[in-house]
Every structure is written in structure tokens, then in C-alpha cells.
Length: 286
Ligand code: SF4
Image (cartoon, rainbow, N blue to C red; front, side, top):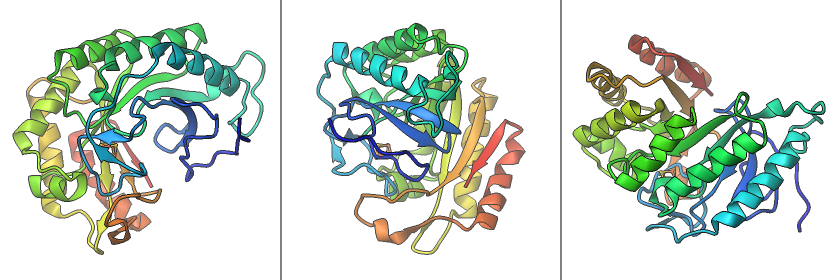
């Protein structure tokens, strides 16, 4: 076993706990310690986001994982996290509230895993076993592209029944922006359908990355397009539970990383304000 290291908000290395599938990170969006589950052990994804921090990202679907091992790793890492191991300061006995969420995210799109629904079940059980139902959210971070698959939907239904939530990626308001930022030019109608499906199935928080590419921040058309996609989903009876606008904080490991930069704070604030028109709970994370 390697030495563990202290966590910081800018450091999302997966090896602090020295486990294969379960890792603790300090997450800005979660607002503290997040215990992550990685089902994509070969770094497989169906998108290629320009800002993606996954090293060795590859197109494809992940192989099955050992679910018994996943359960064991969850028990070990949740147990250590509850004792304050990665929180900076030891927690008081019996107060595991420093764990903000248990999140299925990892090194690729988690819904590509053939065991996605089973992994959700494993996480639901682990959160229950560790007495975290009231204090730690159960989250699936997704690009939303596979929600039409019945197996994926079964996992989302389980997530919903456990009171969990989807963090749904919406990084562009036009197909051209999504081609640039997500490496995939999905049409608006498809993104809207995915968002409607998500928000109807489970509490869904839209996650909007904003960043500068080649010195240019998000365009008016892009921001307007994202807002309209959310508005149309809401008008169709599928309003998201909230929106998080967040900026680039960690280095991309993809080709073209040198073209990216975080927006200045004042610009982030202005961009975030644009989303107020939605009248949904809004967080802007620098
Ligand atoms: S969807 Fe997530 S894992 Fe896939 S490329 Fe984008 S940021 Fe990376």
C-alpha cells in the first residue's frame, strides 16, 4: 500500500485511498469531501471533453468490475473517511457528516458500465450501512447520453428511490459549442430529450462548465442556448432541481489543453447571473 496524501480542492488524484474503484476527493461542487466510485477502469468514455482531467481517456465502454470488491472498498473508504482521515481534522466520534456525497463518477461516463444499475444498488446499500443517508448525497455524474437505455434507466430509478440525484452535464447551448467542448456535436433536440428524461426520472442538477478556449469565453448564443434548453425542459414538465455554473479549476489532460483557461472571477459572476432568469436554485463555483 502506498502512503496516502492530503487532499486539496485542486488535486483530484484517485490514489489517496489506494483502492481500485473507490477514492476520496475534496470537491468544490460538493462543498467538501466526496467519496467517488470509478466504474471506468480503462478510462473509457463516449465523449471527449476538451477540459477532461482523465489521463489516457479512450473511446469505448468499460469492462465489468468486481462488484464484491467495490462493496468492500466502499466499506473501507467510508469507514476511514468517517473517522476524518481525509477531512483535514478528525471528526468527532459518530459524526460522519463531513462526507458530503457518495458519487458515481470516475474516469469516464459511468452509465456506459454494463453494471451501472448494480453499482447504484451497491452504493445505496453502503450509504445505508454507514449511516450516511441523512448526511451524504448519493450522486451520479453523467453526460446524460445513455438515459434511454432500459438498464441505465433501472439504475436511475434506483437512485431516485434512494433519494439520490443526477448531475447532468450541459456544457454548450449549440451543437457547435458541444462539438468544441464535449467533442461530440449532439443536436439540441437530443440534449433536451436527455434532460427531460433525467429530470422526470430523478432529482437532476444541471452542471454548466464555462471556460475560455483560445482566449474566448462562452458566447451569448451558447449561454442563451443552454438557458433555453433548460427552459424548454421545464416547460415540458421536467424542471431540473437546480443549476451549477462552474469554472475550470484543474488541468485538462486532453489534446488542446493549452488552449484552455479559467474565466476571470468577475466574468464568471456575470456569466452565472445570466442563469438567474431560470428562477431555479443557482450556484456559481469559481
Ligand atoms: S463526459 Fe466526463 S469523463 Fe467523458 S470526456 Fe467528458 S468530462 Fe471526461
